[in-house]
Length: 283
Image (tube, rainbow, N blue to C red; front, side, top):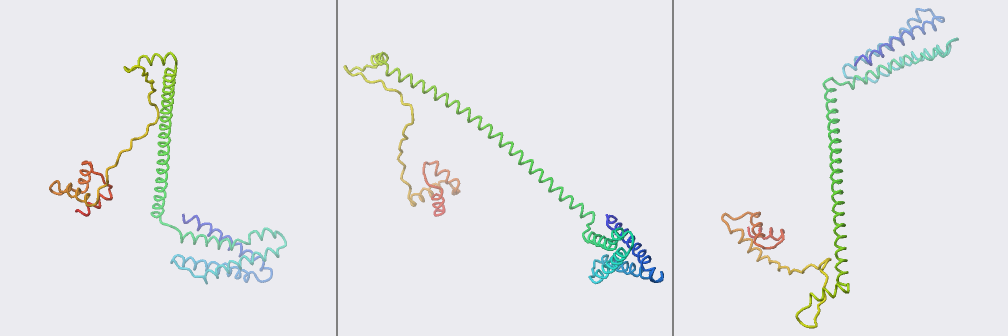
C-alpha cells in the first residue's frame, strides 16, 4: 500500500529534476559557461531534494516544520519559474515546454499526498477490526430488514384472514336477517288475513263468552335493558372492618393479593384504589 503513493512521487521527482537541469543547461549555457549553468541547475535541484529529505525525516519522527515546508515549496516554484521562462523565450515548441513546466510543483504535491497518507495510515489489525464492525452493522441491518418484512407479511396475512372472516360473518348475518324478515312478513300476513284471522280467533277463543283476544306477533327487535339497583357503597370504616376481618381470617395473616381475591369472592365491591388504601390503614 505504501508503494502506491511513494513510487509516483519518486518518479515525478526524478523527471522534474532531470528536466530542470536540462533546461538550465540549454537556456543558460548560451549566456555563460556550461559548468556555471550546471552548478545553477544542480543548486536548484539540490535545494529541492535537500528540503524534501529533511521533511521526510521530520515526518518519520511525527514532526512538522513550516519553515522547511515553505523553503521546499520555494525551490519547487523557482524550478517551475525557470521552466516557464524558458518556454516563453523558446523560439519553437512553446506549448510543449509550458506543458511540462508544472512537473516540479506536481512532484511536490505528490509528496504532500504521500505525507497525508502516512499520517492517516492504519495497521492491518485496525483495518480488520473496522471491516468487522462494518460487516456486523451490515448483518444487523439485513436481519432488521428481514424481520420487518416478515412482520409485515404476517400482519398482511392476519388482516386478510380477519377481513375474510368478517365478510363471512356479514354474509351469514345478512342471510339470517333476510330469513327473519321473510318469517316476520309471513306471520304478519297470516295475522292480517281475513280467513286466517278468523281461524286463529276460533282456536284462541277464551272461556268467557264474547271475548275474542287478538293474536299478537312475537317481539322481534331491541329491548330495553333492566335497571338494576346498585348496592350502596361501603364507607371507609366498613371497608376497613371487612379488610381486617378477611386479612385475619387465616393465620398467618393473608397477603394483599390473597385478601383482595377473598374480598371479591365474598361478593363485596370496592375500587382497587379504596381497597389498597384500606389495606394500608389496616396493615
